[in-house]
Length: 215
Length: 161
Image (cartoon, rainbow over all chains, first blue to last red; front, side, top):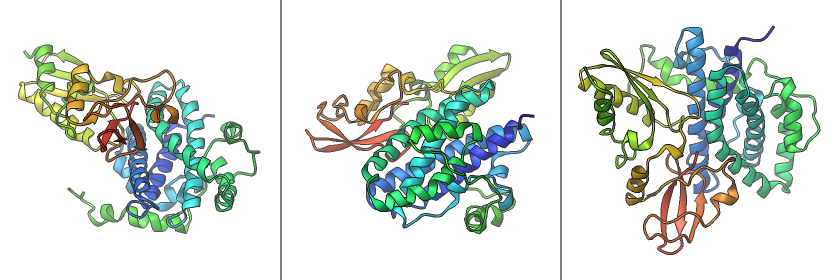
């Protein structure tokens, strides 16, 4: 039996929303100004992708995008463990995650672009245009840091998590893309306490104004 | 009854909310206009998905169509049918005059770092091609930051997507 497409859309949207949120935590405090701008812009793109994916899922489920993004309980989110950790202060870890996520996401988007579902294929093609720039940025940093021990260590820690971003059939493509052997992946599961703290912060405004906040 | 030409004309009056020198029609985000009796259906192809101006664009298009006495329906088309190649020649010139370097044409494959670092990008202020990439990312999702070594002016370059 194939899974309903809303499952896939919510995984994708949750990954993009939470990574976007984590990336935005560098705004104002990145190692230098250009990276402040870069991570803020990447975060904005990822959250834009999340919004479009939530809107598609919301249409299927008869609800709206904000309800899916902010009104679910923490345990209902299905984002991959890779995107959940708060990494402010850990630049090596942030870049390792950025590089691995973009690589995994590239594999996933490539597969979606070939989907027989025209809406999924269309949205994937649109996302791909913007992700090209994220990949360039991530690859530039990986090139710069690849021989640094701290980066190597951060990469090793996240390799099993990166595999867990993808469905099992796509994992060999990621291994090939980054030139690594597959290892035991860290699968998606109910998010833990670190995610709950993020959820608390992320949904605070929405929860404080149940009738809808206006700006 | 409202005509298709009148709708196009009205939409061409709407400035981009973030770069008001260029209209939504110049930007190429209006894919089609269809008249169905009193209803006007517009297919709107968003630019960058995280762009906060998208909602404003949609709202302004609806208001412009209502202004013509018709009932608007703006459908958002989420595929890759918009690219920076859809920006009109007039739109590119308006961008350049306002100090934004227009996007380079799309190539067959995805943009590469080598392309971004090439000397193909001209400074919108002095026309020199002695410019370098400062940051792939800029103040909004659609822009990169470059620096002109001839007139020593940083400038914003539209990303090609």
